[in-house]
Length: 136
Image (cartoon, rainbow, N blue to C red; front, side, top):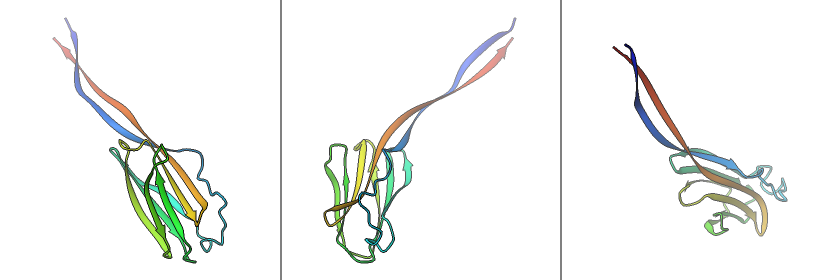
């Protein structure tokens, strides 16, 4: 008589970080002459475990007063910096356990010229491998 044995070979839980851009990047009142034709950019460089690395680049050929603010879901400023140099480039590592949503704002003086909001979502995935053995 044959019998089938089912054994659980491997069971693993892995947390995957999912990023979603809320809406589209807003270029609020962006004027092309502001940065000599260049536009501020915010990109996701990497997302591993619970950490997301963002890259912020702001060309500023005219050396205008630029302000960069990163806010949490409640609107609290997590980071604020004033920039007057030609090219601003900085990486930011955000821990999704500490911030569910982050908003990047770029101002020229008091005028908002760019705004991107990211929602950091943890997605739980389960992997189960099953092996079947035929016995005698």
